[in-house]
Length: 168
Image (tube, rainbow, N blue to C red; front, side, top):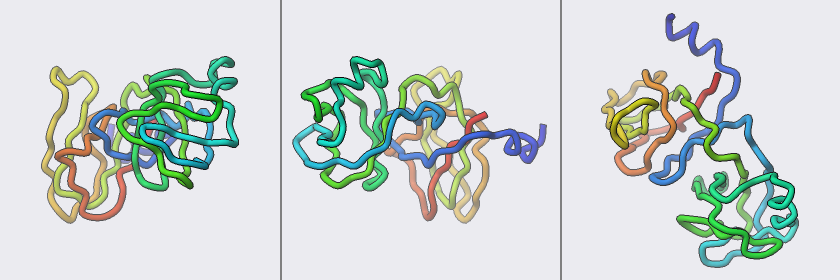
């Protein structure tokens, strides 16, 4: 199947935030989007949301993914520390940041549309080791030839633009 036919069958997309510890979330499994109201070490605080109620209603789980789209950071929910506070790792989400929570473990592989870049490190579906490094010709923009679950921050160099993950 040609690359054009493959890309034409894609149904959902998300901008990738490279992270050494967080997988690319599947956009079909978005739980909610909101804005933080305060900051504390290793926490996400949002006084407009009751996380305890949401957790009790199985709307999200420990281990789910948070994308901070204001600061281009990704984190994992580690704990529910209060009605309006989540414990997150590896960093705190700053006050005033827009964030989205996604269900974890739903990415069975996605195709990447790459911007102008020189190098990418990914976790590919079916790869026997943790990651693969791939050198890309600078000045080119193309679809990445493997299905992946994660784009690492370390060893990924973007010259300009953003990486888009596309799902079937």
